[in-house]
Length: 121
Image (cartoon, rainbow, N blue to C red; front, side):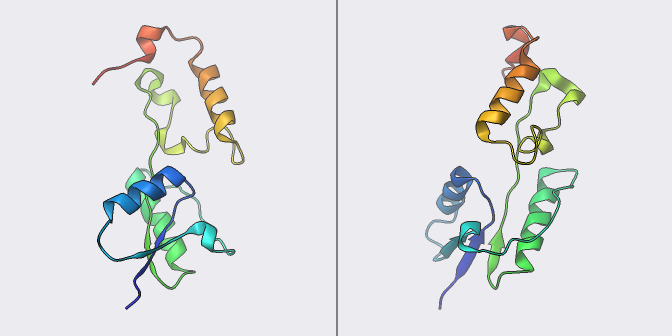
């Protein structure tokens, strides 16, 4: 019996982490790159869990297999309410590259002292 599982993320690092967590369960993995059609959805949840559910349900509506999704972001305590970790991937614009996001974040953080930027938990 073929057991397909769609790993619904565009992040290659997340794909590898998901595969690692599911190792030995006998799934044949698919990624969203395996599909030409993409669902339309907005990650408008108020938590990472809600955004993952939104993403998984959207993909479940167009594929004929199980779907696993995740969501995550960067937490920057010094920015307080000026920063929303839920929008980490989109804060620099919908089509921003990783470099664009890094540059935008460095610009936001430019006025903070190094001791303010680094928090150890």
